[in-house]
Length: 104
Image (cartoon, rainbow, N blue to C red; front, side, top):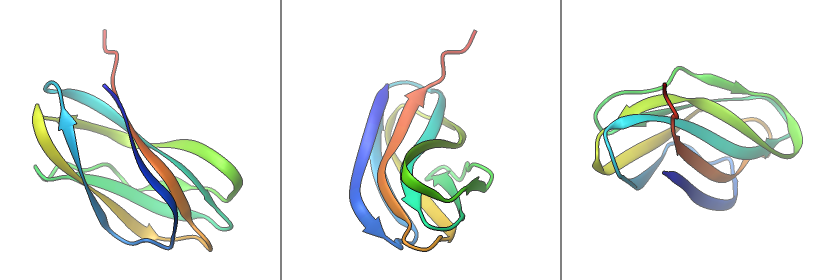
């Protein structure tokens, strides 16, 4: 799975829900492509109640990809909630990327 959820040039968004189709019960890495004039704090929670720790996203004038964390997701439809605990000045999120962990 390599799924990108695009949200073009959203300024100062708050908690947002995204529905994704998960192909298998696995661990997935959740990342964002973003830019912001100040530091931001974000996390992701699934509809099963499992969430990432809060991740700090440093100021970036250019689009940058940064990992939020890893989640174990169940196969089928899943709702992910992007939680923005502190939005930096002019925080913009271009897309959310969900990749299946390669594992051993």
